[in-house]
Image (cartoon, helix red, strand yellow):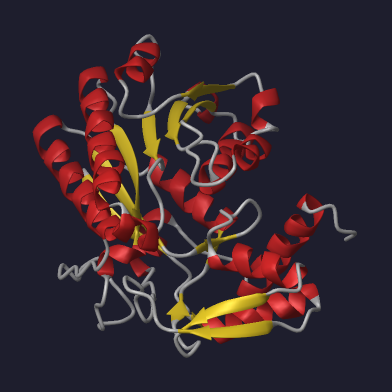
Length: 324
């Protein structure tokens, strides 16, 4: 089946990664239906900007609704989909510690509703946005999908582990090919305002101090959003196994201090640092072994970290109407 005849359902389609995915799918000739509930975790206007181009496309449809609500599925049942890409979730490690029940409801019950919909409608390809946070405090780095000792330390991470396990159940019982993608920290234009690169860049532009939890030596595996999207599209077309898990990272780590310096270089601003105590739920480092994704999905992240930061800060300055 050609891309032009494939209809993809994308949940969380107005979000950071979801909107980039929708744009890329449309460019490749897919039909796309996106669901988003415009959760007030951050301003609605951000998501409206994210999907402003997609909304002009004749092959794009947006349904505003919640993946837990039956009314959404009633609207979808007349459609035929070749795949579901499930990106919708309550996001963030620290907020999940404050609201664990809410995270369980959306991330677990919402995923179950979608899996039931896939079963009922005979949709055989289900791509699930998991997270590097499922590895938790695992010191065996770089993290490999073959390491089955998952040690999540936040409710958010726990919901992602549950999603992966329920995907295995539905794959075995109902013949749904379930592909879980463990995203490592994704960067680029449209990044959520609660994430560090966005938050720190905005603070620097405003001349404010950057809060640094701990000694600045925590490390993250950062991935540029376009590279992540290419991995997702490969997963949509993946056929080699009925159940698979892949890391979508960059196979290198950047310290918090290095990240701040990269933003400072991109903005040409000297950062002001406010030292704070370490936060519960944070892990000391994330680091992806991407050999499986490279072999099975032809996943080859190509964007250097500094380039990704520069592309983000260019977008942010335009958004803030700062001369670029």
